Length: 316
Figure 1 (tube, rainbow, N blue to C red):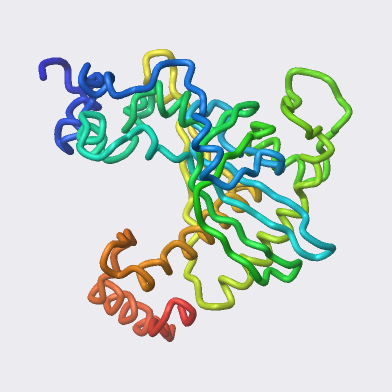
Figure 2: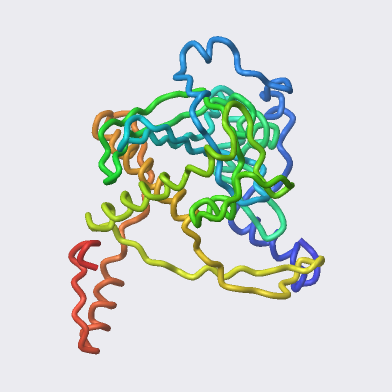
């Protein structure tokens, strides 16, 4: 790579090269594995999956998001019980084992984001179209649902393949307005989320109940010893040349906490599966904190008259 060291694109290219991140276009072999567009769900998928297209389902993402890979749903089961779902786009219909597309996805491993570019793990024809949980379209999902009462207690859990139909694309700001009670359901304008299917904005406005349930779930998780450190997020604004010209501390909103809490609950529920299928289940988790670093920090605190019990996350 040749160029001036201060050139942003050159520095980004160097970082990608250093970490063996593939920035090239998808090969013709991998693209040949894609379905013809526009893709529609085959009849057999409706027959073998749980169909919840009549359940209020929606996405919550940054306003600019184009690859909507997860969705949430809520359905009132009884006076004090709601059925809440987390739905992840099911790519298994398209990425078949040991195909060129599968091998390409293995090499890429994950989406990589730079300040000005996105390097996707899967071609946009999948991630932004056939596998994107866009509003107004039937989509395949691998999902988990829970029946949860108003105290946060889970009574029923179900995991499997679904057919879903998102009725609305919400931004984090939209969801925050709903939580704050300031969401005007009768206004007309470009800023109001568009609805699809049998639902209207009043159904979306009722999602405040989902916020209340996730707050209860969080309280239970923290009470059971979950460890949480709130770290500041520094956001940079870039000029047309890609150079930072301003910055600010990002504010963590309750709408973001709502999504995070349900994703954590999904991960916790799915992580129990290896106990049932130890020979064929994969578990990815964060590494255990380094004991030496923790001991050094305990000693640092002790010298300053602070007692730090690090015997468990709950104690911390």
